[in-house]
Length: 217
Image (cartoon, rainbow, N blue to C red):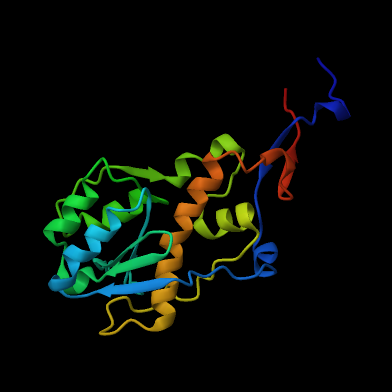
């Protein structure tokens, strides 16, 4: 039997805990936010999104606090570098131009845990999204074991994305400024996560959140 030595510690993973995140400064989208809640404003919003080389994506659903209760997708946020459109699907449904944009493989969109978004969206709309990159498909090659947006942003940028608005009512008549900022930040953050994971600027070996794993061989 081969004897293990101190030199057998050769592998590592990257992860972060809540205490570390809570000590970080807050990251917030501080650019223009446009609430799209009428059919008259949909086409112009989609036309603007098509001008961006990459668009961040996320959705919000009214939380269910009773077992068995399921709500439909209430909000879809699509963000460029300096503007985010909040499509209130609970008011306008899924308009044709937005539907076409989601299915257009030539328009690059990026999100995180997209499978969950599609599962909820498919409850009400027959849409087959294309042109999407899921951040969770990229993290393993960088030795990152955490997969949530908040943890990934903290690991890659050293900043905290607040989740205080996550369980608020996304079907309210009017979204509060805090809700709008929260929703926009999540979509916008996906753009920067993708860039950091693909442009070579992140070096896993020098991450302050690297944790060594003993070699079991």
